Structures are given as structure tokens and as C-alpha cells.
Image (cartoon, rainbow, N blue to C red; front, side):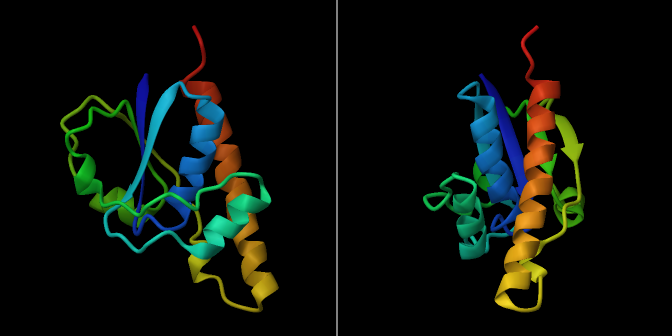
Length: 140
């Protein structure tokens, strides 16, 4: 079983969305963890956006990356530049991946405009996670 860490700044939106999709797409073949270099709590708009796509992340917690320093990760995925720059050293042979997704929590405008930005980022993360699983966890 592979161990995957998704790392973001506050572990509230992007890493939580990625956690939901990686858990779905790995179909129980990996342990998926998400964390932040800080903890900001799981964003209610991220929860609502994921529920629209049939994934419930409402029981997820916002975790600090230091809680996972003793786990031997196979993959570490940073989903924002800040997390990549601040990512602590992991004494593992983890393959590192990076993709800087926009932060939907910074969206401004009407409720519908903000919701639309959450959906747009969700779809970007969904595609990335699907391709990651197909590429990195395919059966040999």
C-alpha cells in the first residue's frame, strides 16, 4: 500500500479537495494524507463544492505536516508554491510532485462567483489527481 501526502499552506481547500479525489481514484490502494504547513480548518465552501461532486470531506481535519514526519511517504504532492517552499525535509525516498493551483479561498465577488471559482479549481484538481493515479499507481 502506497502512502501519499498532499501538502498545502493551510490544509483547508486545495489539499482537502485533492485528498478527496486521490482517495476516490486510488480505490483503497493507497493511504492518502493531507496536511498544511499551517492549519486553518477545513473550508466549508470546499466541503460544499466536493459534496456537489458526490464526495464528502466534511469529516476531514486540518492537520499540520509535522504530525506526519514519522510516516514513510511514497509520494509528496505540493499543491501551492508556498507549501513547496516551506515543505520540511522528509527522510524518505518519496517522489515529489508540485502543481500550483489557484487558491479558491481568495476568490472575491458574489456568492455565485466565489462558488464558481471553487468549482473551477475543483475540476483542475480532479483532473490532476486522476492523471496522477493513472500515471503513478498503474498496475504493472
